[in-house]
Image (cartoon, rainbow, N blue to C red; front, top):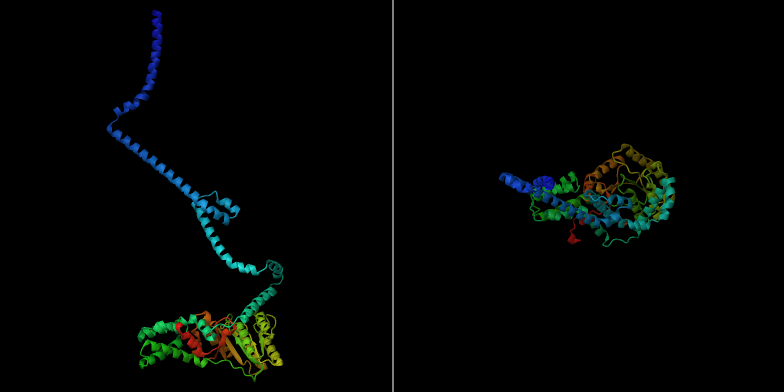
Length: 485
């Protein structure tokens, strides 16, 4: 028994120790939560509570950020889904592979730019369709080697084709409805905005005083009438007003119309062909781009319609395709053209033309010259040489030295007229492109300062739009109101 007790005591003590050790090991884990609150002070509890609250707030913020990221990803997926059809149309397969994996915002912006560009291109494409239908691919391929081998003949042929088509359309068009006066009114619409009918609202409801004259002076200068001519008009109107001949602004408006008509009437002198002189030689001068060669073609048609025989001299041997341009006019109207190769002496070309015209008993010879700047002395000297050579054949030639001016050049046209007149002595002026400018008032400055006959004016592209200058018709068209047309 004693041994059993000893064994029992031994095992009991052994298990008892083990149990105690396990209990000791377990106690700190189980008992710590229950023991700590008893030992923790109220201040520490508050700190722990605040820390827990902060942790909860951080967790909530993280959850919100995750939710926002998910929403952004969904939104990007929706945008990409809408953009995929556009990207497939705009971007090639190679560029689409590079764009699809990247879903960042900058890529979406570049896609928008590309789609906008393609939309602009798409809107522009329909305007090119008619050209594609006109040009045949086979012809284009056949022309390529010709362009490489000979450039100048191809350019010449292109110019001739274009000129033929333009001249054909001009000759086939029916005359505009309403006659020349209605076309003149329409052609002066831009000029009328500054002077003429544009003054009607300017004068209504105003009394005649210094302020009105100041405003009128400013408006006349804006219309390119020029300072000397403007001062002359204002001076005459002021004298009429001081004599109390003008009671209100409406009468002043009518007097302005009279004053401007008085400036133009002395220079309205149509060209009269002297039939005793054969050929009657007209020398056309002017700077580049004023429509000199086109004016020659229209004048040739006009004289031809009057039953006169005409010949053209291609004296512009410097400008590219100038000779060919004149030849196209001659071919269309069955008019002989005397020409030499580009770079030839202009004086010799015109001299040969005078001899040929005399041999053929031609009524009128119109000689073209190279466009030259009025401030280039060497070019102006060459023009003087042409006149000297012509007078060796006929002392009275040229019978008309006509300066072509572009109305759109404004006051620069005055300097052109001055220097050309000093160089060769002008006998007439043709003012072109009045329909495309608001600076048509320069015609008053030219008439007032030079007193040179204004032979023709151009108010359109058609042949009949180049007409003899009539001062009364011009003033009426300039001052006519829309309701009075």
